[in-house]
Length: 216
Image (tube, one colour):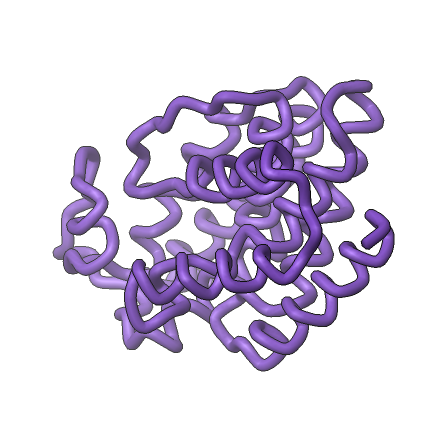
């Protein structure tokens, strides 16, 4: 199977699995991450473009929060990859990238390749800015999170389990994840792209608190 055919097959698979997602992890999120990843790779002149594109397309397939369990998500990914005539080395690289790029409460996982750095940056760029704000509220509403509760404290340190199920609110998520992402990016290109997006989130929060406190 040619690389282009594998990419087309992967696109169809991801659209089928995530096409109706309403938590901000739909096909259009995947497509933005792919575009960002390929753009970063081109600007940085680094990385295997095929590995980057495949990892970007598949990065949310095994996500625990989008599957019945972590095991079920991993099986879904591996079952699909087995259908492709990928070289073993390429398959291992794609899987390693997917498993290493998640935020997981801010605990920094070691990234073993420049491809992982690029895909992680691309995914994190889509978590900030105007799109990031929209996705955050979509996910919070879907999961039944509070819009905001000023009595809840921002969690600075947390385990992956606490990050997933601990008490928080959508506004708190900005402080527990989104506002941290700019300084966690790996590439100069991504940091440049993140600057205006980060600033937009800060402006949004300022306006939110003004309205919350009845000042406007």
